[in-house]
Length: 447
Image (tube, rainbow, N blue to C red; front, side, top):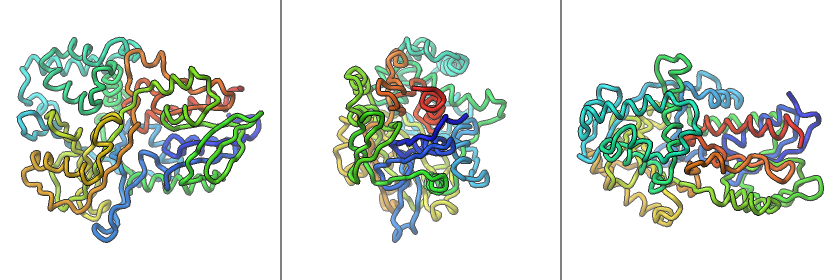
């Protein structure tokens, strides 16, 4: 279905959501401009270009990303952007677990999981039953009535919550875990079980050769072919309604559009759009976000065989160890080096956001040495730190009933971002679900 007549569209934000929306709008016959503050497309999936002289010009993602076989929207995005199937690699991975006893163990299958120390056999059975129960719940709204802690204590018991769930919730949500509803746990379980529901025998992890740098390079070419005007390094200052048009103001000047979709975080959207009702701006400003501080390390040798190592030791300053080269082909992708991510999820008040990069790295490396006795800082070829203060909207109790709306009181102005995903763990596939919602409101209906 196409719009009755072509319109001039502005898409603010050139991440996966903004780029996909722009492409869909252009293919519906509209004239589209994308405004992206960064110097490349991609948003949170934008790449690092790591030390040409030191490591041979490695290019990879600033933050770790993975595609599941059941992530059909993500795979459709790849295809639409021009990434071919033979550029996607599917791999089985191993998972590690580092507990309060300071021992690194494999938990890559159910048998290894049952061997974990610190929980009685009954507690492990209850923990497994909790995951099964969560997989069978179809209505996420009912999960918003209870906090994650209360729901997990009910089904897993206090011992399993304190030993297993609480450290993982703290790692992913920081101190905000206490306010998070059980919808967060439900969304996590649903995503992991999605492939099994589609009849797939096992879940595989996928990546595009070249990382998201390759994806968004293909996107840039495809958008150009479709006539989309992509404006990089162009931060929008204000979006105002002037008569029947919108004026989008940025450092290079003002331009008029018929419709605008803003894909930034909620607080920024509130600042950019002064024509919103006071109640709308207040609702956007109330969204509680978590941010991420993510250290990327290029090492001379591997740390472990595990792609993802969960950490329940509370003193560890990072959320997990993501050894990307236990997943991707190191020889083909990163010049034979080892690529490791050390993410920390926290709100914007965490001191790490104010620390300089050297201080963050210095705080993280001693704990990496503790986890991996064979590791020494001398093995670090290069390190980078990415800080994004507002990444994930915390799903508080009853969040979906009070979530910001995509459509606004300003005709022709639409907002779409993680704040509009009440049942999500913040992944590309979930974010892309907003594309159809925006199009249904903005193109396939009349204002």
